[in-house]
Length: 326
Ligand code: OGA
Ligand code: MN
Image (tube, rainbow, N blue to C red; front, side):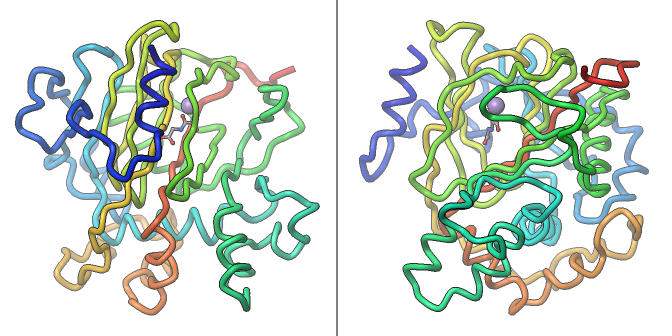
């Protein structure tokens, strides 16, 4: 059933049938989700990260048919969204992080600073080719896509800002001891997809997995422990935080389709509550946080997400008390 439904959503018809896709903003969805209570005693911590709305306004849902699948509907401010999008495009794909760009197709300058070199492309075709070639970057423990294993020697530092963000979400969700140790940033040009899989490479499979969506919306399929079970289709929109916890941590999931809506993301940040002053100024790159409010600085990032989605997928690798993998 999983593969059949994946194929139906992936099929290149101009508009997929969204009737069965769970949209958290739709008031008619109520029988499929329940509201999930948050541990709001962490409001102080939330204030310490710029770019997040007050946690008293967060809407968090759990799927009735998939206990452990939680979604927080976009808790980011517009400036916060821009910050994380710019980090994923400009900064995270640089060494020592690993990217997918093939050495036979791209030289070292592009593979070590893709975003900068992308904007040096002289020809439209070259720009487009370079743009859609970027599909993933890994950091912390690097996921080895061939062996599906992590290795003590294949490790780069986990960025402080993303670590703090994940620890904040995990404590707000009641997982006090979560350690963000490995991340994959997936880049999805419209037309791309991620087929059904289970994330079982981590020795620690009881820690939750945190997944952040930015840019264009996606249809996300969440199934059961076997491919026989019929999956549920969800709409993940920019800013949504999906948590795979408990019995859903080891369930099949996939991204069959990226939707292209025409929502403009270039709204005026001056109307937004200025959250740049209250936060912990060391946690984020505050220069970047400031700059994304500048329209000409933001424009190339905005152009990228007009037809792309970005997903940050964060896992704990080690078990509590475990110091080494092998
Ligand atoms: C993954 C994954 C889902 C997404 O990277 O393992 O499942 O929403 N990503 O892109
Ligand atoms: Mn996955």
